[in-house]
Image (tube, rainbow, N blue to C red; front, side, top):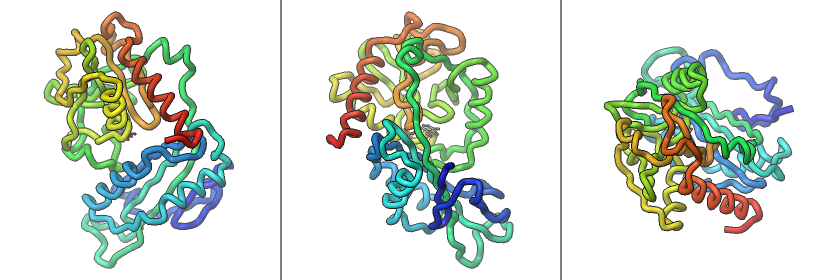
Length: 287
Ligand SMILES: Cc1ncc(COP(=O)(O)O)c(C=O)c1O
């Protein structure tokens, strides 16, 4: 049975309740964060916390994040996930419960804090080697996609468009630019060079994206942070997505057309292998 965290208490998921006046429920007024752990060790935790703090600050939600590391550890412990090869903790903070008015509650209310942990299972090697597929979808999000807001309706619709098209990922497009996925960042590879959208207000600043860029630089792979046009994708040699629950995922077809030769390419594979090695070592207590 899954044990979740709600406002300081640990309880079975079935017993967790929030008031119907919660502003997360009524307005999607909140932020979330997803942090990975390898064999119980949280990876890049400070960066996840920093992004959460920035989002809270942007939305003017007053919440002290000091107890979060202990709470994350406790959730893994209570769910018997400390030994799991990979797991994640999902955390959501909303502005709290108050009578429904668009503007912030006049009297300060306590934010609602909800979190759960679950195992993350990597696709099998055979599945990964087959590669994944994507479809382009118009980006209909607000121009603050850099905030990890729980208001995810356009992302939900984009991912459903991918499911309806029988593919794995959505590729959100605005003004001819291939921005990112519905829940992951997008990279195109041109020969030896990897390219991805810069960190502006129109994409989420993925922690995995940042980590992969660092890893690529360590491997001597040139990185360009620039808008990638959809019309350029015809000459891309490879493409991949990154994310906490995506890790590094090769894309071999976009809109039914092969990317490069339509097979997983060497640049993506090098980054993937280096990444698995890095997080496995992290899980062993190294680094
Ligand atoms: C829209 C979007 N882009 C990118 C990402 C990847 O971010 P991260 O690597 O921090 O998981 C996410 C993760 O949820 C996302 O929702």
